[in-house]
Length: 249
Ligand code: PGA
Image (cartoon, protein in one colour):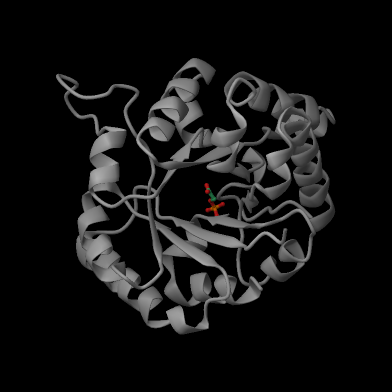
């Protein structure tokens, strides 16, 4: 089965409401040209507005985080159930920024995966090594441990709803992207390890993230195991984001 590419814009904690609306409208206007699945992942605050803009366009909506709790007295948290009810389809889990700045360890990630899947959200599970691990040549061991700790206990049905994002930390927001060879090697490795658990992994999308831009995306998308991209900085500029979608055939 051929895997359709996914181009996802992770807006992170950027933009103000008017800018978010403007960006979503620009992307909506380009939808006739899309040959891939397109996903917008705004701040919680803009989800309702973006949902309204992309409604019935085929553009997908995601969230950047959810609570490990079901509901109740958890001030400041947003539940998976609330997100689902707001029209969210995908959810980022395990982003390196949440692991680093919010202390999210594999126990937390596992709880988030389970609650997201329970409420019918599709997790985008992020993995990837820091620079010192890459320099020591230990990136496969490092990423395998991330997969083992968070994903290996899940079922084949769960796998079918998960997208993997390989995001080497040294490439996130740095302008240093992985070479196509480095990306392909890691994506093929991740696919093999997951497929040894559940063969359905052959159909899972494994997308690349880390300084994707219109200049480097063609080469990355040329790799057989790169099924799309998780785009940060370049997703905030409609022209760049649309150019990235255009590279996905
Ligand atoms: P970047 O971010 O494209 O700005 O490197 C990617 C990500 O963190 O998902």
